[in-house]
Length: 267
Image (cartoon, rainbow, N blue to C red):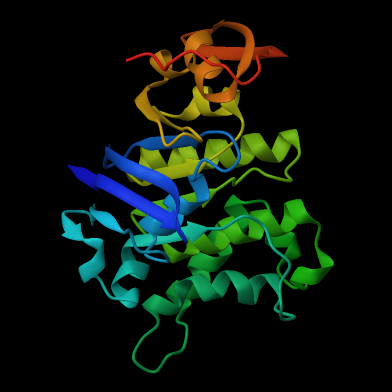
């Protein structure tokens, strides 16, 4: 079953093209890692998939339905989005923030139920933030807030999760906690996950497929073993290094910056 289908997607900011003729399919129950240099359109793509931006041309289908035909409330039952960390504008507590992820599932009276409260508690526990439940967001570190926003998306309990650099600001321990959690969501509950990351090696260890976006509106999508190669990485990042395998998963160690002239991506 297909979770997301993108066809000939094009998007520009005031005449500056960011994505051009982008097409790909994400099977249900898979983890797609989106990588690329700064300015290549990674966050823009997530916002298009979430319905926060609208393509100039092309189409996006979510679970077989045109994204453009879905209302915000319908999208909220299918998609959840974790943005890059930001400072809160209001003095919400951690618990209140995570509970906001359940609003699309509140009853007709608009109040939370015991099911909603259980979902919030479980999401806080899964992200190691339960002990922060009564703290205000502005009292937390960047890494703690990032985990709270991931908890809010988990509490929303959608079949598709979009995550923009979910492990930014996190220490090594919590990076692994989050990626292990995402892996469990995929394998145990059949969730579909799309995440933007700059960490090639975490992506290679956990993702099923990698999508590279280039600053020249080029892209490549393929399995991890085809994506984590010296040539592909040099093509998109202009970085040379050493690639090898840890078990059955590839890894990459950068060694030098190549410069402006780069080889073409592998077909």
